[in-house]
Amino acid sequence: MATIETVNFKAGRMTFSQEHVNVSDIVGVGGSNEKFDVMLIQALFKLVELKLGGFGITDLPEPTGFFDGKTGRVIWEFQKKWKAEAQRVDGKIHPGNYKNRVIQGGGRRMTITLLNNVAYDELIILSRPDLITTLKRIAPQLVLTRVS
Image 1 (cartoon, rainbow, N blue to C red):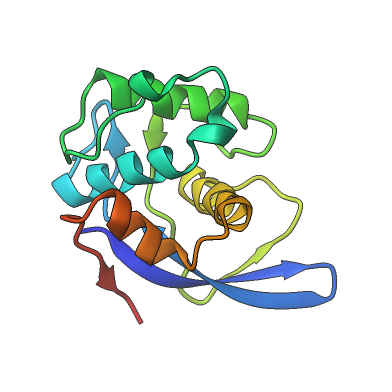
Image 2 (image 1 turned 90 degrees about the vertical axis):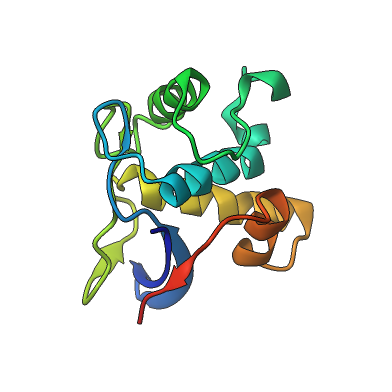
């Protein structure tokens, strides 16, 4: 089940929190590909499509919740494009472990964290209200559970 979690970051002397979406298990070839985890990833890619570069709108997966070739390709392409900042380039999106952690700025990030960060950048450009509302507009059937 896809979740909403509070993530703590530290950049220089500044510490801040941000609401991120997360997957419950691995999305990708060989992963469990739980329906709402996959739908979340597909919706995030729809949101960040402008930052993907090289992908036309027809190349992006629809947020169906079913893992397919398009979803697998876009995960690989995203990781390759952001390889300097990604912890892994393995074609999989692993769940983030955010509880009792502060993520340091400037380091490599898990793909799910990087995807959330890119989504927030896109929200600023689009002048959208917030991440959760925007994702629910993209995929109205998406179910997200808040984790405290």
